[in-house]
Image 1 (cartoon, rainbow, N blue to C red):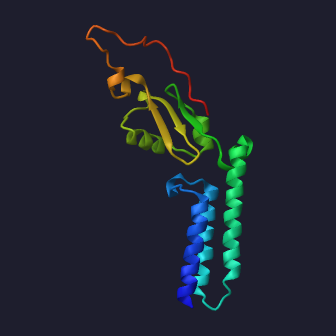
Image 2 (image 1 turned 90 degrees about the vertical axis):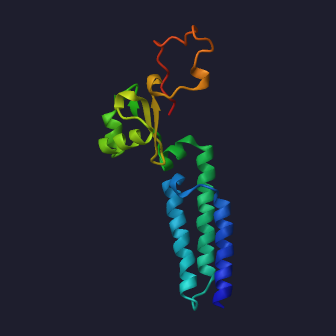
Image 3 (image 1 turned 120 degrees about the horizontal axis):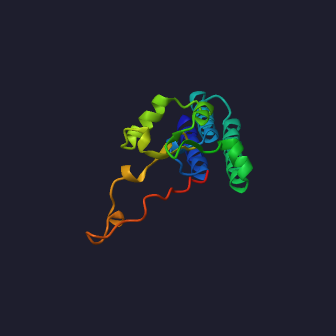
Length: 175
């Protein structure tokens, strides 16, 4: 009996998780993480308590999965709902200027900011053009042109050829 329950729970879990998508744990939104934790908890109970009926936990798994799919579909259709559920990216550094209000609003400390900047290979805030705190908690750092590594496309084709004018400021990223 326990073998049958285990195989059935495993099959149902694989089906529901496959329907929910391929996001990795670090890329999950908060609601997706909560649903994954609830699904894991619901799946554990019928395995631990073999004398309990199997239908209620399986039904709950299905309802949670359907609610998550509905929420994901609705958030694709509505920018307002997506912003409400998942938040919006925050511009922490804009043209080298630190946005203290956004840091405070996101409870993002200067130490966390410097750690994220160092993981991008930069050592100083002055080397950062933009730093964007994404809705999944990842800080994307865009360095100033002088701090970016040289690429083949950015190098002159002839030794006497010059690049584009350096005085032009790039437009801020759209959030």
